[in-house]
Length: 160
Image 1 (cartoon, helix red, strand yellow):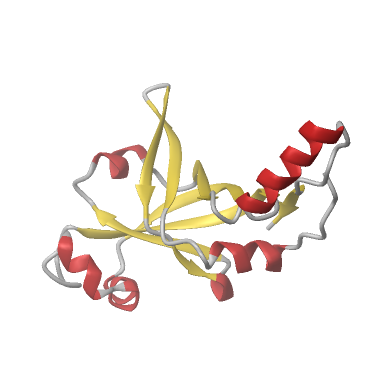
Image 2 (cartoon, helix red, strand yellow):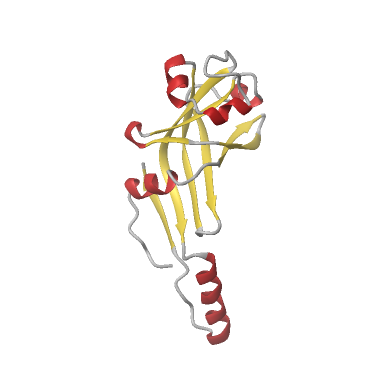
């Protein structure tokens, strides 16, 4: 694997491309992962989520709960796991700022009392980044045919 230079800025660039990730935490000694829509705020060094305060996840998340966010773009061959901590934030101004018309699928509007925010403070990211899957497939064929290993990408741990 060729080492590519990764920095916190590179990670933020990649995270801004995602519309869905999995949030994984521990509940009753079991790992639980849920699909969530990340609202990346690089200038705040935070990732925000809007959720229903009555959902199961809010009961699992106390202030400074350690979680992992898992991002996957199979077509781009990019995989990122970001670890950090979350806090529940019940702030109407923040909800208004994060509000999107798409959220009407789950909530009546930004004033819906069920809405609560989750702030995620990223601490470390693991990224695996490789060539597009068609290129990766061709490289694997070359390896199979010639026995010569090819470059299938990079992995790095980045402090956020």
